[in-house]
Amino acid sequence: MPSEPILFAVFLIFTGAAVIATLALYARQSMLVAYILIGVILGPWGTGLVPDATVISEIANVGIMFLLFLLGMDLDSHSLTRMLGKSLWVTIISSLVFFAAGYWVALDFSYSTVDAILIGVTMMFSSTILGLKLLPTTILHHKHMGEIIISVLLLQDIIALIVLILMHGGEKGGSALSGIGATLLLLPALWLLSYLVVRFILLPLLARFDTIREYIFLLAIGWCLGMAELAQWSGLSPEIGAFIAGVGLARHPIAQFITESLKPLRDFFLVMFFFTLGAGFDLGAAPSVLVPALVLVAISLAAKPQVFRVLLLGIGEKAKAANEVGYRLGQMSEFSLLIGLLALNSGLLSKHALYLTQLTTILSFVISSFMIVRYFPTPIAVDDKLRRD
Image (cartoon, rainbow, N blue to C red):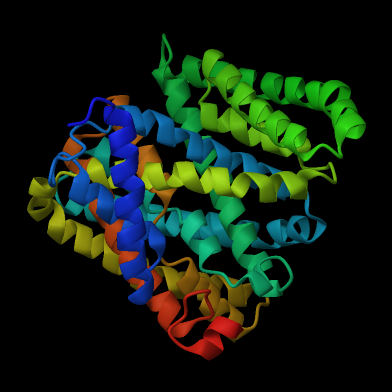
């Protein structure tokens, strides 16, 4: 091993990811699958070339913070606000349906009640990253299809944030109820602080130096990570702080520039995040969770599209749009993995249940992305006509 293990690990991650991503693109797969696969290959359960991904995992979490920061800045779109109201019941009902499905499947396979509850929770969400990256840029913000998908994903992300809040509240001293109560008191205080800082400090600075792009870039990063650190210091999760930081800037016209500027940096850290997910998966545990994982994958890939289709038809969407949205949302989420890891670290979830969640999510990513690029418009579609849509 070279004298600079972190540098060597980063070299292996990105060089390996570039090679596997090339193969993935030729195979019409999402590059997220490549990032997870290189983690499995290089991690401690594979070749062991990256024997300890702990430090990389800590760095990689910054990618999730940037993801939530950018999602927060998307919340002020007028068209999305209209769609969020329209999609609210679709998101709530579908979340309850898939929570129940995951819960009962886990119980049937003899998982504990707490494990079953958390497995049910991880089944509620679809992948924001996969959903957005496989949308053609021509429809992402300008067509109705993009609005539907983004509105459902944003609402799911808000539910995921609520779950994270409850988990952090339950970790605090005293009873779980008192911990949750303290968390719910801290949340509006952090939100108010964000509003005041944006209103009286950031907006004047942006107005004064809005032509200096490097400064805007640095200010945005500092604001995102500063709020994340403040949230963690006050007992909330850093992801929640980053999300609140994004919402605070959403009304400013420069939010779109910040969003575009931070995407490459977000993607850099997300490569490392998905690598650590693959590296953390114990290949030896796969056979023991394979059967329940296949059942959950079947529910996710077969039932999610149909449930979303029925619910979207119920709010007046056209059949073609409802069908496509259902398939684009027919997988599990990176939030499923994040919640599982946090639950394990909190002592709420068993390792066996975490392996089930990880395998189910990875399989759903692979199969769902293959189905989407084969039958629907994406930047890497099999059919050139679909690619140009």
